[in-house]
Amino acid sequence: MTVRNISCFCEKKTKIVATIGPVSESKEMLEKMIKTGMNVARLNFSHGAHQWHKKTINNIRQVSDKLGANIGIMADLQGPRIRIATSGDVIARKGKELLVSDVRYRKSVSNMSADIFYLDYPGIIDCIKEGDTIMIEDGLIKLEVSKKSSNFLRTRVIDGGVIRNHKGVNLPDSDLNIGVVTKKDIDDLKMALENDVDFVALSFVSCAKDINGLRKRMERILGRKNDLPQIVAKIERKEAINNLDEIIESTDVVMVARGDLGIEMDQSKVVIWQKEIIKKSLKKAKPVIVATQMLNSMIENPRPTRAEVSDVSNAVIDHADAVMLSGESANGKYPVESVKMMAEIIRNTEESPFDDVYKYMDLHISSEYATVVRSAYEIAKSYNVKAIAMISLSGFTARLVSHFRPDQNILVVTNRKKTFNQFSLVWGVCGYLFEDDKNLEDLIVKMLDQTKKDKRLKTGDSVVVIIGRVLNGEKMRLVGIRKA
Figure (cartoon, rainbow, N blue to C red):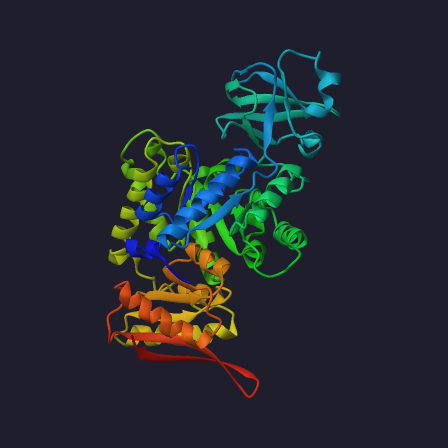
């Protein structure tokens, strides 16, 4: 069976992650979004029943198989989201004192004051200390803890508003001694693994231990250590910034989740950390996604603001592997147009000189194999070659080549469906799948023949090829130039 990646023909190297929701779940809409440039379909497990997610996964698979596209599916776990639990609205006027408790103490403190509300995570107030900040509804409402008692907190309103039931809460100053995988997440994870998703996004990551714990849990559920979904570590907490290096080392993919990150820290620093996270991820050859409100106005409007266009373009110039749509494609009025606009911004930016790899970018990564890949990159730069081609069974070789951000097409062939789908998140990679072919020697030849049919290459074009050989029991990796 031959499957070719039609999405690489959208003439862009930066990938697009699009969140699927009520407006984009149908096969018709999914086909339009794939043809327009979507590479990865994200399912937000904060919303929707398992039946809906299963149906949507089936729709994505059917459409991608029909089109011959390697569309990755990402299950984004909700994580320990803390929310307001109150029976009625609480008015928070600037300077006013409010009492805060959690649902564990509702009966014992409910008669203390009318100006009291609860957090829905039992025991969470034990993690909050005097002087800490409580941010509500994406940081629009801000409280400061002035006094802590055994079962409630006294707070002063810094920025006011109306506190409503089920609104999200952030505790940027608190050391939250809570696990990142909840009971709901475990149930959602089992369902996602049963339906063979390609990526699992972990919310509110604090350290490498969180990543390793999820990986071990997936191994137990699946009963194997190979062909696992790749873990996407969402960087959205202060603790994650403090432990950034170990998180990047442990995870498969990194996401700059700017929504909660912009609440947890000074918003003016988020763009600086975005660049730092991308740089560190590139150094370790880990794909990195930039997310949150990239074309947010297109939820309601057919065109983005100029600032949003600049935001997407800036992420491309930073050399992110992917940019992400959330509400724009999940429940907005213009899901297909949002993907089309994002693809257009990417293409125009990549064609500009500002997308070139800067001289100061660190192109040295600590891997023995990276020396071979760097040789392929240097040969491709020095000679008039059209592409760099390789076999990649795990995806590692493809990620290493992508790390160098070459001008040439990156053509990667595999006989593993999971690896093929995971190419969908790697910058510049155009993946090919020959699932029934076990003869690795034939894969490169078959791929190059297919690229000529796809008009990616012409007969006689020069291609740098990375191949593996076993000689006298020793594994050898070779780089050469051949004609298509």
